[in-house]
Figure (cartoon, rainbow, N blue to C red):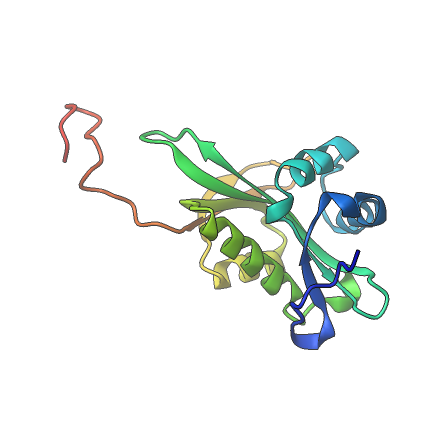
Length: 186
């Protein structure tokens, strides 16, 4: 199977969508890359939860010379029961780029590919959490239009706080929203 698609981007890297057939080759490397940089220890079951159900929303950046993993983004898309009406909420669970390849737009490309894939599947919004101390990640997401929606105090196991970031993809229908106090439509 030829895993390299016709999707070559700047810097000579190849960006491919994850496929189940790639698990044996890439899952151990994905776990190692993510565990180097993210503060949460994820079990194999967490990775499989995302990759088995939403492989079409997960992307990898590969070195075309040897097919080694440079970066990965792992996402999902589900119906979320919010305060008013259900929304199709995309979620970026994990993003990591090998430290020797940072600063070249790889994370931006991976996030944009995930946004595009979720947009094509009618996501209303995309959310994520990131440590408040991870300033490069905060800048990346805010540059792509994500907004800080909430601070989550001591959110991570290491005691660090996080920000929940939201990228609204569809306008909010204020006029059609029901008034919570009198049951009337505003």
